[in-house]
Length: 196
Image (cartoon, rainbow, N blue to C red; front, side):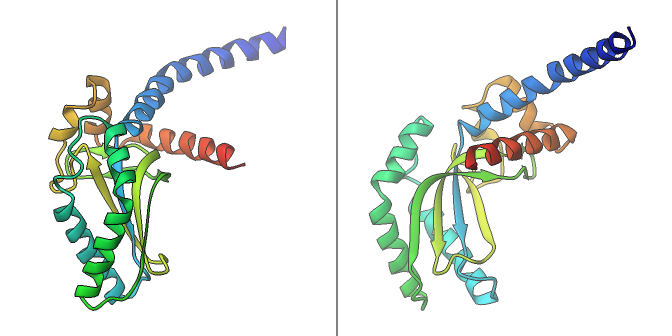
């Protein structure tokens, strides 16, 4: 009898918490499935290498602004995959033009990102498709943004409104809150279970 008195309240609390958390996790997962990120990793944390990373960022954003203009995530990922060689050549050519002889490793991959707070929206933690560029040794601080929907050139959520539903928009526009910490914990646990 004592077990039942303890079990029933705990079960009810668990059920209530799950009913609140599950939609947040599902909507956050849905967001990660609709976004394509650009991720640039510097050679090192030296001032010169960090400056080079930002210069390459500017070059990439300008030179690809007409490239990633398809209507879906899958189409943009395919465009990136089809253009990896050209992007690598262009990036290394640009680096040489600014006096940097580092190579660039470039790939389309899926990688985990922590929650990111922008001026007017917050992206939940999760595993996102990304176009990842590593300069040289790739051991420095990184920089990233969203290339689809196109948000990189301006930190605004207008482009996201076209691809996210109302519930997803509510999540990203609500600002950082404890729910994002819950999603981070869930995604990290999920990511660890996939890696093992």
